[in-house]
Structures are given as structure tokens and as C-alpha cells.
Length: 431
Image (cartoon, rainbow, N blue to C red; front, side, top):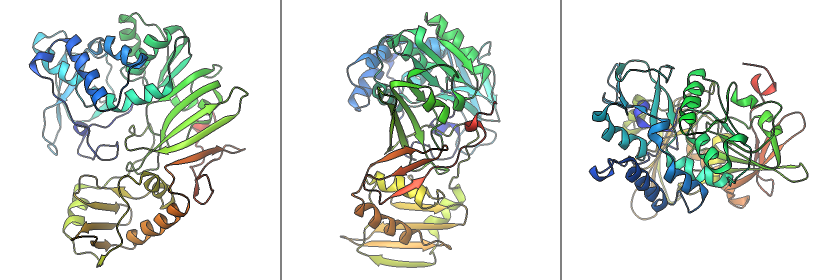
């Protein structure tokens, strides 16, 4: 998948699933064999509830990731060290194989591209400076999404965000490669994926172009977008065949509270869609700006006394109230970021410097501290009242309006918001 996924090794920012890190499962010495490593990865995914018996599981058991990703980066520099340093491991070097297997079949994302480089013809060794520009998504996120696609033999599948070609390979394995197309805007990634998929005997259509435009003139039964967007691209909805399904993560500029858009076209051509609150999501796609809490801002929140402090019996919403937090991401301006690395609830607004810190003190008591021009505590509590009045939804209807607008609404209509209007790419402009 072409855009950066959720991996602490890519930088010092919080990972983008929410900010909770997926545990990195290092291989044991017994897993130094690819087949053993594949089986261990699948068993771990099953234990975590991310994978069930079926065609996706079967494909992952047989898919040699070392063929798709014969090279991968491991970060050698410490967080915050400048310039950052990575070693490119190579499957053709026997001394690299044990560590590379750990990367390919472990519990984290796989770093596959540095500074937009070509993937073919690289020489192993150290790179410094710049950044990792492509990762293969952590399988704990990808596997359940692939299962939700309900892949079956003969289906036409569009994989948007080729990256290392993992999703395309699974689709080819399950559906047959004749109906599969994989798309990425980075020519180096599509060239690499085409060569390595061919090494597995798969020859899907590999397209270099804008993911938001899809593959004009074609229809697909399944469309999978491997990066987060601000809205569902209209062109992809148009390319969805009757009885088809599209999956894409949608969020604001904040990475903290994403949604999963599930779009389906009925047999008679009508479009039905919903936006589900989810815990984890892909990283932002090309051109989508993100906001973050800097290290200095987080330290200030942890230590400053704030504008005011109060003790209250009013508890903050819980992490499991994901439908509320999804609404907050949009209805509170899309400018709030949660610090999931903090022990208790911490939310900041980088744009204006406002922040909220809420800590439990004894039974049913909370110590709430607020700083800045925004009273984030009041904003969240007021929205919580509205959310509960709307039935505490976790899923919302996603409505496609005439003229290209997209609106999200609870079933009762008490909570609703509009997604951003389409930009030039979504209106049909070429890249």
C-alpha cells in the first residue's frame, strides 16, 4: 500500500491507527523459515480476532511475502535522532534473512521505500536523512478489511494504493488475476509490484495514476482503498458494479478518530453507504494535510496548571464511545488531536493551543484542567449529550447528494455533518 501506514519507525509522531501502537511481534528462532513464519503470522492474527477461516486466511498461508518484499528497511536510529538512519535488508543476503523474516511476518508495518526511490535494482545498506515514503500495511488492519470485502472467485477487484502489492496478491489468489486491477500514483511502486506479482505467477492490470480517479471505463465488484481520505471519491463510487462493495477510511485532518466508509451498490443500481467509527485506519493519502501534537505541546499539557481546574463527578466519554469521538472529529471542527500515549484523557488543539487534561481522582471523581481559548471539556460534554439523545450511534448513514455533496447522519437525524466538498481531482481533473 503506497501511503504511509501506522508505524512508529516512520517518525516520532504518534501512529495513525488512533495513536495506539500495534505490538511488534518479533519472531522466535524457530520462525526463521518462511513457511513457519507465515503459519505463525496467521495463527497470531486468528488469536487476535483479526482473521477467520476462509479464502483470505488460505491466501495468507500460501503467500510468500519475501517474494513481494524481498527488501525492507529497519530503523537503526533512536527516536528523535537526526538524521534518521535505516538499513535496507535484502533476502538475497543470507545474513539478512532472519531479521527480514521478522519484519515481513511480525506485527508491524513493513517499510518498503525510502525517499521515493525505485524499488527495483536497489543495493542493500544504510540510508540516512529524508523519510520512509511507502509501507506495507500491518496485517492486523488489512486482514479483517479483506475479509469484509468478501472476495470470491471471478470477482473484479480494484486495489487503490498498490504499494508492495500485498492486497493485489491476495485478490489475485482468491479471485483470479484476470479481473484484478491495482493502482498507485507512484511509478516506482507499480513497476516493482508488477515485477514481483509476476514472480508469483500473477499478472493483474497495474495502473499508474490517481487513486481518486480509479480506472475510468471499468466496473468493479470490490474496491479497496488503502489510504485515508476526507471523503469517498465520486469516481470510485461510479465504478462500483451492481452488488459491489467499496471500503475506504475517512477522517478529518486529525488522525485520532477515523471512520470506515462502507459503500454498496444494490442489484438495481442504488447506492447505500454507512460510516462506521473504527479504532484503526490507514495513513492519510497524497495531498491530505494532517495535524499533530508536537512533543513540546504534549509536555506542556502534562505539566502546565492550565487556565482553570475543577473536580467533577461528570466522567469523560470512554474510549469505547467511538461513535461519539467520530462525530467529535467533524462536529468540533476537525482540529482536535488525542494523545493516546498519555495515561488519561488528553486532547489538544494545535491550531490555537487549547488543551484538555482529565484525570481520575478517587471513586467517580475527575480532575479536569483546561487551557486556551477553547473550552474543549464543555465542547465534548455538550456533544456527548447530543450523541446520547441520538441513540449513541456507532454507525452513521453516508448519503451521496445531487451535485456531489456527501452528508453523514445518525439514523434519527439528530446528528449530522457534511464531508468536505470535492477538490479538483475528485471533479475529474487529471494528475
